[in-house]
Length: 140
Length: 161
Image 1 (cartoon, one colour):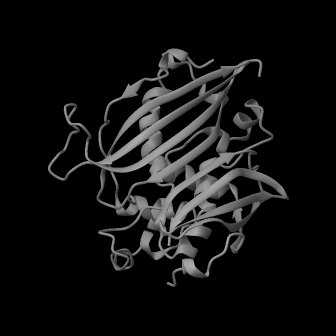
Image 2 (cartoon, helix red, strand yellow):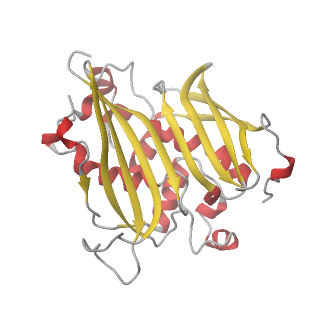
């Protein structure tokens, strides 16, 4: 798997885009894998009782999924040294149906001395931002 | 309203979490992480890792377990049905790999209540215990090799928010 060459990168370069799709099964699978069984992620009645429009994806599922764009670009998932995000808007997942999440990664900062690049992720559903200040620092 | 008395509280190193290969594969599949280093031992070793590499947010599994010591304490007064996750940050001092025995020191860094909303920030310092140690020692300066720092903020809406 090829690795990016820091000398050939410039701030503002788009490293890639992808669309991620969540259905209810994806939420149940993440609940089991992560141990986060909060019922707002699988039970409509509980979600509505909590003031939500319906079942929403785990913020950590969205955060955990969209970073794949960066770790695959970096060629080494262990190269991600710092990763942060804010959960600005819940991702509703209909039943039946899917939520489509659009992800774009852009080079935000290059530190040639440290050998690191900060990739900023724009994460939207139907044009609305669902994650804010999503920054991935990778060693390249 | 979250109990402000918990700010500054420290929970000592907890019972170790054993990072298993199948758990890494299961978590990686759940977040769509297809990189072979999560799934294939030869690929992981080819990148210089001793075993399968966990995806960047895997440490949340370990952190959430530690945070529950605080969150589920009724005296802390955190109504989980009114909690939303506000932000999360992972700093990896080295990647988590299968075979790690991870213990976590939990810090309640900040509790701020404004109006009917409380914002609670916790920090998990995650350490890999040396192979010779089975239970974290309360006397040790640190419980082992520093692996990750996981910072998380929860927003708790009060009854009238």
